[in-house]
Length: 292
Image (cartoon, rainbow, N blue to C red; front, top):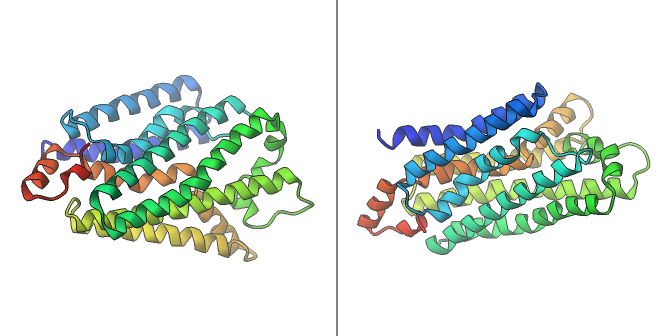
């Protein structure tokens, strides 16, 4: 019970961050409201993680647990990235880059310690996806530094939004339109691979006894379903009528960058526990997969 309450609260931090972002965007809340909320989220979550780890370092698991809530806390107050606000877009890009690197590093670290087929598969899948995604994020800086931000702002609601371009764009495309669609498709692929990687990592952690079997199976199945939904949505988006529209919006919603952190968040928080680490040390299981 002593650890259960902080862990439940830590699990709820991700949906709390999402709620802040959604409400702030829908209601156009001022910075004076959203900034304090994000600061409170970040500080509260940091205290919860310290409680869960007992103050001991837990680098690999901590990277999984921090990426999502850290993203919400650091940039949730500025709203969705847009080239109409270049400074905000670059700030968003820096934090997204850091979150993606944290997820990749944590996954590779766990794979090296678990040394199992599913763990290696998770690292390979996420590594492939991250290679393209990190280049995508660097391209955002290129847009701003080259002075192309105004040109992107004029077309990003179509060429930078999967719900629109997956349905097919009308008219003669410009080079920038083609580039934005291509870069966003790289992001779509990254989310599919990140879901698959989280699924494989859950299987590896379950087999190693670091997660309860039921929880590991649930995360693995959810990851597989999410990856399948994105693929199906991207394909079905070409269908005329409401079916194609729903499919396109489904693919769009599931490939917003912060979605890459939801399953790692679940896995990371579940792994963080001094009591659990101690029990695995006593049983001879690889507790170093939990702590650094």
